[in-house]
Image 1 (cartoon, rainbow, N blue to C red):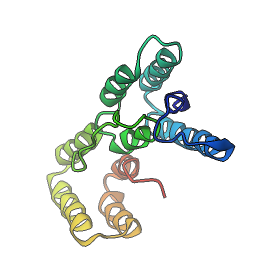
Image 2 (spheres, helix red, strand yellow):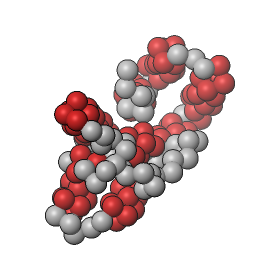
Image 3 (spheres, rainbow, N blue to C red):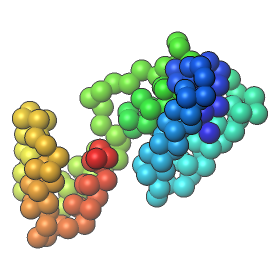
Length: 165
């Protein structure tokens, strides 16, 4: 789907069948990331497909696609950065690195509402992870130990925010 945008001469295009194959592979990986991110939010998946279909059928132009995708994926910088691969030069979406996804903020609020003490310790772990460049395995162990006894459901929700390995 996203490959249609690349056909306009975009960032992923290039020449020759090898480049075309690479673009198709990138589009497949990108769609997998979109589906993993929004697997439980069917309406977002439908909206993304509609955006791509509107472009394919020329009901919208690249600027329209960019605006709609930017809004749809707001807070999901990895998806926006991935989408930039398929856009023509000059249409890339600017990503602000230090803006957490809205779902992450909701999760942090949930932890705080559930248990103030666990919330403080959780935030300490997160800040230490950022400050010390802790590896993901250590982060998971510490957060898992923190949530395991009284809040195992929070750990399940937490791992959804981790980058794919």
